[in-house]
Image 1 (tube, helix red, strand yellow):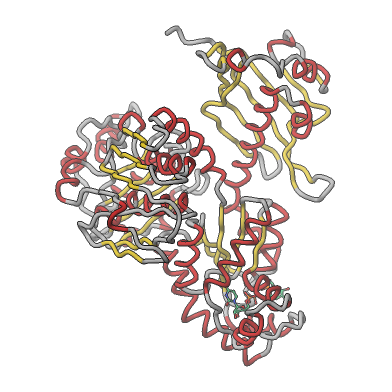
Image 2 (image 1 turned 60 degrees about the horizontal axis):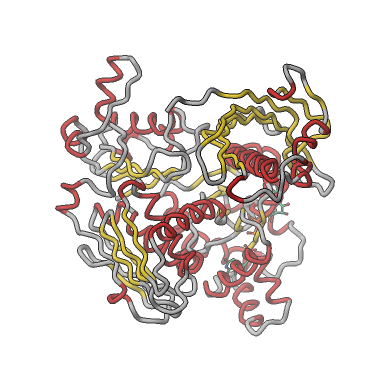
Length: 581
Ligand SMILES: Nc1ncnc2c1ncn2[C@@H]1O[C@H](COP(=O)(O)OP(=O)(O)OP(=O)(O)O)[C@@H](O)[C@H]1O
Ligand SMILES: O=c1ccn([C@@H]2O[C@H](COP(=O)(O)O)[C@@H](O)[C@H]2O)c(=O)[nH]1
């Protein structure tokens, strides 16, 4: 059995969390565990590994230790000892805390700069991964079962980006490879044909068929680069236009950036009347998510008089689950229409078919599942008092819905539980208290938002874009920076003058752009944050020309339209010394 723990947050990973989520009994005794996180390698990962090794696991970490890279730690479930880890990573450097006791213990879980998806000896005993189009050429939703030793194959469709990403995730999903497990990939059919030979760590992408998509190629390369260090990936791309490796690399980094922009989805599950809709409204207000209730979308579809309307209405009256294609289609359309990228999907997936169809069609894996735990008698009372005139809020249908929930929806929750993706909240308390218990799960989104605001602000400064700059900055901004010669500058005019001097028309290769490096965020409660980073100024086509250290203080406020927004209230910049190279 494999457990996957995803995106463990810095603030959440403490001893209590580890004990709660990963009781010793879960980890010992031959169970495998995959740890996957987009976190920069840090204290949280170290603690996690430490704990895991203590309870008898072996840790193998995959990914790159840079910020934003995907990390995966795999335990084969074998007992940890120096030998098996050393043989896996013979060039690994032990942690060095300066404490010799800790050091000898830490030898047992080196976190190395990974060299490949699998260690050489594992490669020998497991299959080599090939991805070839020939074996996967059929159109029309063919399902491909992968048995141990089977080559993986890719046939790209209009949603090439998704299917390639999906297949790659299968490749990279260590459980499939390590365990020689069976995985399922689905071909969505139609579109361009790709030939992708991926033999760790080199791949050739042949996009010679018509209309080959650059961005899809870039996306694939990006996935590849997330798993392997770039120095070890050899990518060539062949096409009519002889697109060369340089393009792919540029494309890959652009795609890496875009990938962060891919939708974040949280599934909100719980029995009928457990309070999903009630809490979603609060999450939307506080964290800027778009709320998509699958049930509401279906009711709207019925109300629109669509061709499926009668069938949907009848199924809902009976508390039955409607065909996955319908719900997923409605969700996909609503996501696209919103133009946003953070979604709470409420009351979905209702069963395994819902889950698989959503993953196949969208290629999206939920960030986590927010699960409301509530006994049936409480839910029944609430639904009978809801008073919204719904066709299914009557005792008879409510009881059918409870049955469907426990037989068909609970297994979905169990599935995510095995991946350690379930965040369970008791919803018998009053709504405010339930919301208080939900908040910690959303802290990381506040951190991401404030970092995003910082990046946009810095970009606006680079571009001399005072309109965007003003959107992010408080009129009473205070600042200490070298240009002010030790004075505290208040207000915007000083900064706007600087922005105005950025010459938009300067030739591209003479422009200076800046890059945020090693950022960190510290939240001060929910409505204030400090962001710090080093900022490297580069000539657009040249080396780093100067560096500075910046600290920005942000405040979260409600804007006129009622949504929260981050405003910069203070800035501190010092010029940092340049390294003598
Ligand atoms: N914590 C709570 N305490 C008391 N009543 C609540 C609580 N949360 C929600 N309710 C009430 O219970 C009823 C059902 O809540 P809600 O519509 O949010 O549930 P739901 O899980 O979205 O239901 P469904 O799955 O049927 O859409 C509503 O009338 C709501 O006001
Ligand atoms: O993914 C879904 C969501 C809902 N349904 C059907 O709609 C009703 C009502 O759903 P609520 O979440 O309570 O609003 C549900 O009983 C199902 O019949 C669905 O089929 N698939």
